[in-house]
Each structure stands twice: as structure tokens, then as C-alpha cells.
Image 1 (spheres, rainbow, N blue to C red):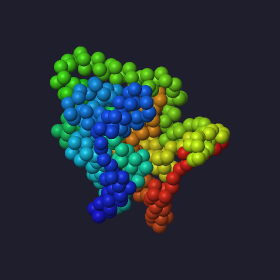
Image 2: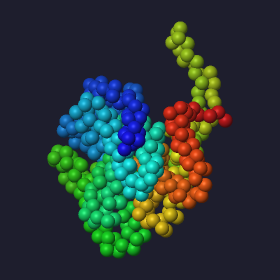
Image 3: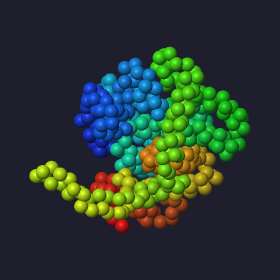
Image 4: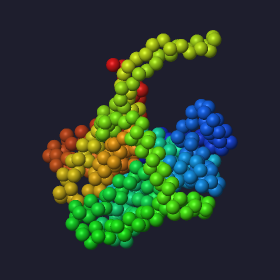
Length: 400
């Protein structure tokens, strides 16, 4: 337990910028007004922060940022209302997510340090740290997907937990649509385990997820909208995402997998600028071509977690309880591999991937006959991950 608390403390230190963040609604609204008039740039995290503030003060979810479901923005708004800080609740949610990952890993990995390793990997992941420190929707979606995984595992032996899984899945979907992969997990697991009784009741449980999702639009209905208006809103949301991901120029399928495995975002052109402080002018003095790199990439965890997810499918022959972890990550990967995705679409699946990775590492560790070699290798691997996360900063691009 002391090591687990130490991991959480170190994670909070890495996210310390959250404690110095203030939410100023007047400034956010003024900047958004200028942006609506075609002036300047307005980032997604600031848009979600403003939308959350307006939601908790009675604005219907279809009036601002209707492209995404409202739950995560309500939670951001609650953080603003309670702390006058639009990222504080996101950090709290991140810590709870790390705790849930630890609870899951203890069910399969009782020996030290393997029970702690998934939590450690996630707490050191640069993408997870970044999204825990900004007001983006994905960190809330990650919390609900991780909670759903825990409830899905519990429901294998406790059938009463099954409805709770669909509630959690509905809440995840109410944060971001990329979590829809959760609803594909149960039928696949039922077929794998030949549990035909639960497979027959699956459509009924889907109603729970649908009702949960619909309930997050309570303010929309209280504003005088009806069911048909709700359906029309969902179609408009689908159209927005189709335009952004499928029609605005898209890479080849599974491009996001290439990003995840190599850390290369794609080819890029960089302008070299010269700043003259005297007359306050900026001059373009040249251009360079290169490969854009993902600043959050970790070669010691990301590519290995994909390979481990595939290998974990092999281990399912002897331990089907682990099936939800690799299947969940691979389903998410497949679902976001068409269109124009961003690497953070995979964030809700990272707990699944890292749990699969540590499960495979543990299996290899136990099968190794040389005790000294396996302990040394494991120790060096853990130290290398810590060093990479704390000390290594990737350049934004490499020149070609």
C-alpha cells in the first residue's frame, strides 16, 4: 500500500500545474465571443470549460458544443462551480482511475511488483498526465471505461453487477462516443464463454445503457425538447463527426496504429522564422520537411502494449477472465482506425492495454527459469520507463 500511495503522490507532483489554475468565466466568454466573430483561436479545452460553466448554470446542451455528449462537460462545470478551477475534478478523477486500475490488477496479479505495475505505467504515461491537467473530455471517458472494466469483471461471478456495467458504459458514452466499444465487449465475451443465457438478455441490458445516456440530456428535455428533437440532435452530432473524420481528408485505415507503434504522427513542413525585436517583424527565412513526432510517445510501453494485447488473446486459452482487457483495447483501436483520428482517442483504452502488457510480462516472468536474469531484466525495464517519462523530451519533429 505504501508503494501505491507513493505512486499517487508522484503523479500529483507531475500534475501540480492543476493547483495553480483558475477559471475566469468572463475572460473565457470574451475570448469565445471574439472567436465566434472570426477573431483568434479557441482551443477545445477552453471550449469544454466554457460549455461546462454554461451547462451547470442552466444552458441546454444543444446550445454550445453540441457535437459531443454533455456529461464530461457537466463534470467540468461542477469543478468550476466547486473549486473555480476547471481541471481540478479531472485530476481527482484521474487519481480514482489509477485506484481502479490497481483494484483490477490485484484480481489477476497478486505478487509484488506486478499488481502495482499497471498503475505505475499509467501514472507515468505522458498523455495521461497531460489530459489529467487540462479540461478535455477524454480523461472522464477513461474513468468510466476503467470503471466499466472493473464492473464487467465483477459481473462474471456476481450477476447483480451486470446492470451496473451498462450504467457505467452509458456514462462513458455520455462523455465521448469513442467509448462505444464497451457495448461490443459483453456479447463477444458471452460467445467466448458460451454463456448463451446472458447473450439472450444482452439486448435488454442495452436499454439500461441507452436510458443512462439519455438521462444526461435532462436539461435538454427540461428546455421543452421532445424525443424527436433528441433523435434529431443525435443525427446532427453524427453528421458533424462524419464530416470531421471521414470527409475532410483522411489517412489510410489504421494510421492511428502506426502512430501508436512508432510515435510518428506523419510528414510535416516546418517554417523557420526570424524575429526582429527592433521593428517587431517576423520573417520566414526557410522551410524544412520532416516527420512530426508525438510528444507523449513512450517506446517502452505503447508498442509493447499492442503486442501484449495480441499475445494475451493466446493466454485466454487458459485464463478467460483476462479476455476483457486485450479485447477491449483492440476493439477501441479498430473502432477509431477509420477516418481522421487523433492519438488521444486511444486514451480510454490505455488501462486495458497496460493491464494486458503487465499480465503478459508476469506470465513470461513466471515461465523464466533463471531467477536472477528475470529479476534484473524486470528491474531495468521499470527503471527505464521511469527515466524515459521523467527525463526524456521528444523533439516536435525530425528533419528528413
